[in-house]
Image (cartoon, rainbow, N blue to C red):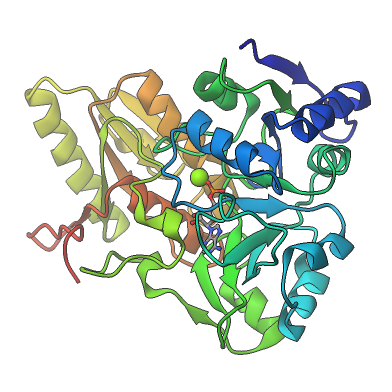
Length: 361
Ligand code: AMP
Ligand code: MG
């Protein structure tokens, strides 16, 4: 199949193209579309055959549930058995926006969409193209991130095209997204509600509205024998093809350690890459250097993360070392994704030893 690739401005959805996209979804086809977080691979959320097509286009295991995107608060009722009071308050505060909530699903939602679970993930995104597209599609667009399974999530139309050309009917492309990291997921079926995946909406922002919340402990480290509660988080996600290792410690120790590691890798004939803050990047002796932004500018680091990982693939890095970033605010989400991309390989600089977090408590 030929993928129709249509470019438009974020604030000016190309309505004839968006209508055509909606028509494709209502007929059971697939369309990739931009949101404020990352690009989504959309199909009709109430059509089991469309869900199956999404899994196969992405090469995604079918036990990994999709998020249903809505464009009208009223439509939440159709998807859920009940809407808890706290969910109403979070919706009021953060929808439309980068927050996904988990509910007990209604009979309307096919198990194919929820990966066999009796719960459903719902998000009301805040992006003019996404909202126009969801409305034209009938109101319920099931979508995971629009990457091939295992690759970093797409933060621009070209990333989607690279991964999915020939596998979807259409791509609505409005250029680079604003946030660059997937939505925060919070499970509203448990008490207290629990964060399953950190994102732009932080724990502090959520508890500011509903008080006490829990955080799935697997979001910041891998715990032996414990699977993350969001099924998708158990897979090795977001991975570049080169071997990625995170180096943490003081700025001086990290620079020395990374340069030592780069030198050793070069001696083995490997092509090297590094991810560093703007303050440090010029000190590194690597073949490929990526400037993640200023250390305190977590938003820029978040927005650049996935495209940096993809660029290492393009430039064929064999080994990549990354500085660790501060784990506050959206920095927590950045570290969560970086740890997953690195398969939890972390080296502590300046302490003589190496700490491989990948298989430990
Ligand atoms: P993606 O949009 O590619 O990040 O994929 C959607 C994410 O939402 C995956 O990590 C899923 O595991 C998670 N998710 C979707 N539905 C549920 C659910 N009912 N319960 C827990 N996690 C879910
Ligand atoms: Mg994904």
